[in-house]
Length: 81
Image (cartoon, rainbow, N blue to C red):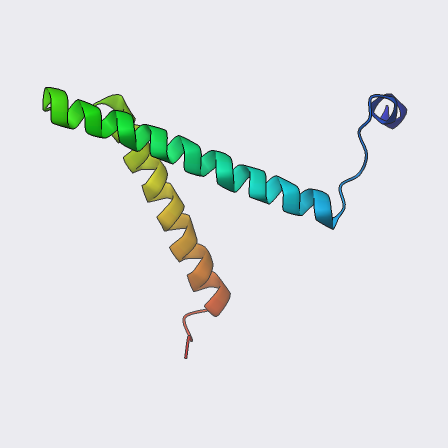
């Protein structure tokens, strides 16, 4: 099975591939965040209603900050100096 993927150009990821993936995900997340914010603000300002874009943006940011706080708490184990 692995031979099929090798012939298609896939290979095991090294550190540089991991870095490239993280940078790509960061940039794509930022672009989506800005677009959702733009469409959400447009709906709030123009129509005076909270639209689906704002709900998706709010939910995504809540998950992001919640996971970040949880992981930092787990990393420092509550004994941050």
